[in-house]
Image 1: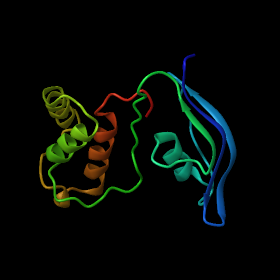
Image 2: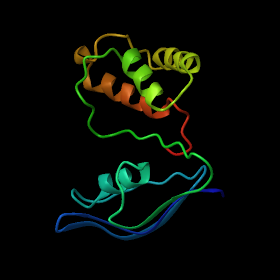
Image 3: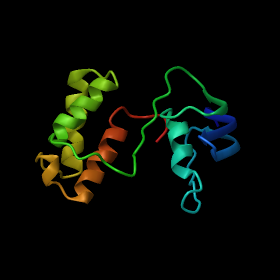
Image 4: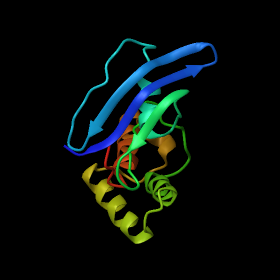
Length: 144
C-alpha cells in the first residue's frame, strides 16, 4: 500500500505534561484504523498532530506525495452565526478550492445530508455534526 503519512518518534508536551511518548506509526492509502484509549490518553492530541494542526515537541511528521489533503472532524463545533452553505464556502476558500467546484460539492452535500440551509445557531447538535463532516469531506481528502 502507498504510505500517506508517517509519525517518527513523536513526543508532544504541554509545559511539564508529556502527552505523547515516542509514537512511530505510518498511515497508508485505503487503510482504516481506530485510535482508542481512556480519557486523557492523548487521542485528540495525536489526531491534531496527524492533521497538521499541532507540531510534535520532538520527532517528525512526514507527508508522502505532494500536498497531502487531510480532512479533520473535531469533537467540538464552534457556535457560528453562518448558514451551513456560508460556512462551507468559507472553508473551501481557506482550502484554496475553485469557487464553482466548491459550490457544486456544497450543494450536492447539502442534498445528500438533507440539511436545510438555516442559521447554524438554530441547528441541532446532530445537524452541526453533519456540517462538520461535510467540511472534512469538502476537499476530497487523501486522509480523513
